[in-house]
Length: 123
Image (tube, rainbow, N blue to C red; front, side, top):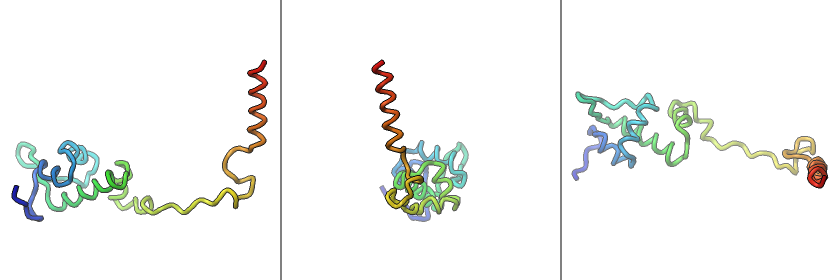
């Protein structure tokens, strides 16, 4: 097959092959990402412009490589997801937290509950 120029328009099958997903996935992405609008000719034939191909690569990277949800990818592409891509600050260690603020149940309370359950089951 002859390689197309980077500026050439691509059919849906050519775009799908280049991106590495089936054509039906590209049609689905068009319904979920409003900024993805390939040219449509008579009969509904789609032609993906270079800008569309770039967007498809970004969508695929967000969904397949980064593991984002559709909604997360939509926010990231809209510029609202930048904070979501940054790693969260590390949580404080439970050993450094005051006892009242430590996560998890109190061990003594769990022992009391276990003893009550054992007594109820023995009765």
